[in-house]
Amino acid sequence: EDQVTQSPEALRLQEGESSSLNCSYTVSGLRGLFWYRQDPGKGPEFLFTLYSAGEEKEKERLKATLTKKESFLHITAPKPEDSATYLCAVQVTDSWGKLQFGAGTQVVVTP
Amino acid sequence: DTEVTQTPKHLVMGMTNKKSLKCEQHMGHRAMYWYKQKAKKPPELMFVYSYEKLSINESVPSRFSPECPNSSLLNLHLHALQPEDSALYLCASSPLAGTGELFFGEGSRLTVL
Image (tube, each protein chain N blue to C red):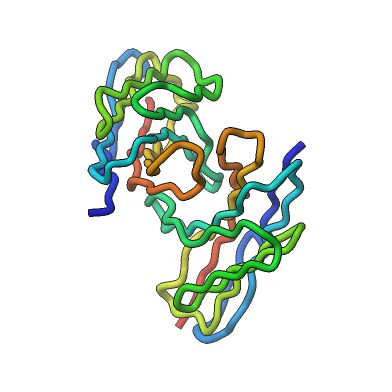
């Protein structure tokens, strides 16, 4: 059975304190891995797509990386506005493109 | 204009009511989606429309009835809902079905009394 597990469930950071979120997956065949950010009461906002092991994507203070079993979202020198829930989702090769979301990591960045 | 607009933002309904959620996008996307999200949980796929035809129904109860009148509009008709159906209902679109890069609306917060 395909599984997506995110850790930690919650993360509290001081402003400027860099950290990483983990998304581990067990799937029959990976078509793509996606990171989204979700603010409370809002819809998810697409951040990155990763397709193959070794691939990296960056946007401002965020950097996403992918291995054959997991993905990391690195937050460098976070600011309070980076506070959100970060969702990882995988697309399996035989799933007609359906996304399977992880439970998310809730990040709080304090000044 | 990269935006998916959902109305209403909040909806309270009784179990015998009939109501509808609406979603609109003007990005020329040909795939539209309905997701349901409970508090502290990830979004769960309900329906996918591709080129205005229903492509995926994730075994959703018939009290939820989707409709895609044209390529820009997506409705979700609600009837005889249960309190456990209370959730955030998210609409999303993508240029084509089968991509994982979705554009989500802000959602409609539904409360069933």
